[in-house]
Image (cartoon, rainbow over all chains, first blue to last red; front, side):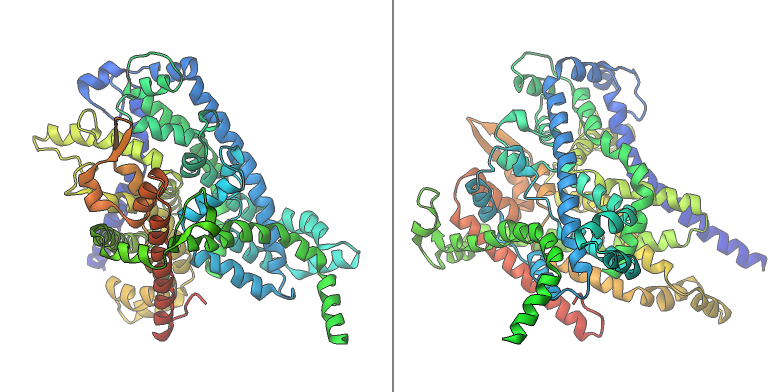
Length: 291
Length: 315
């Protein structure tokens, strides 16, 4: 008995250790970036990077909030794109998912096939590019909101959730004379908070992280979201002067500014994440099993 | 006549539902189906000034050019190699992670590790490229400092063509393994504990439990995820590769690092560079069509194969 108990324990320790290391690997890189952003340039150049800054300094953040007007403007753009986009996306996705969740709807299967085909095959980047330009969305903020508004995976997840809602709720409202739009808004949506939180988070993250659409269609730098701006300064050798030249000023270089911008760009998601996390684990599990 | 009237009445009965679907349907038609017609560009010498209807028709010429171009085999090789490596490691990592997590009885620890492992999924490749730069660079990178302090020679795998593909796979697994494990954990939690009890009574050890109960029980989930993964064999992760291949601008001409391109350029990055940056529309459109078409064949084929082997397909 004692022998098997010991053997049992060793493998458990091993498993816990591996998982702990995996957890560290996911977490430490972020910690490191934060550390670099809070370090002074001098310490960075002398000692190299460390997990805890050798010489603590808020220089990078001061610079951004004092002189980085462009960064703050991009931040505002990102907030607008993300909030407007998530709102529009949730509306159009739920509106599409609800009818498709009603098994009795004639033509439901045809529409599902119609949707499903778009997940298999698409026209490619070039035709899409030409399309957006020709409908006049080019260089408008809507070019990065509208084309991404409806995601088929998300729609299917919501549809599956709606299908699980007891029909009795809908029936009693229909008897009272309500039409389906009212039912959707007043009955179905309030009950769907977990899946709305989940899908809302998915859309929000997608909008917040989107830089390629803006790269293609937003020529005016005043419209740039933060992610696109960040991309440019990371790939440049000289982040501060890049920021400045995008603002038309002169300034000395700094690596810590790069990292501070990274932190600012990631913060909203990391802050939002814990609050919505309890919803989406459940939501994804239900949705993916049924899906 | 009465049949049609009845059908119409039925449609009218559900008019609000159809109304709700309308914006979505319009969306799909405009943004998904219309670009599909744009495929004709691949068969023309498209010029934006002449438009689709007036551009010269050249039939399969671009496809011939594609198949005989030295680029093609490099693109195909890179795409297939990188996707295959990602498939091997990126497919097994979430499963292994889920199996490990499943063994953990302590709920707090389990939730904590799960939560932390999901985070990379929400971080964009732009941020990751920033993190990678901070960690890997020769000057102040953490990895560089640590390895050099041990007296070893440091190689930055994120910019070295010899290790670049490995780097792409590693970063891909880092980003996706945690999130990918969700679906397996869900399936694992649905396994009837009585099966395990019965096995324990028969004296099964850990490995036997794994092989004969755990893995077969999640067989269907594995098959479905596998089908979806294979379907993207011909796709790559455009964002990842585009962001990790540095470009330099000289004389207003942007050039991507040639050595890295040689090992990592895939169809999509090629289409972007030649199509969008060099304003050549028709040839990249042909490349894109080629890729989309065969990706679809792959996914349909794998689904058919899975069904033949007695699993549930996706449809």
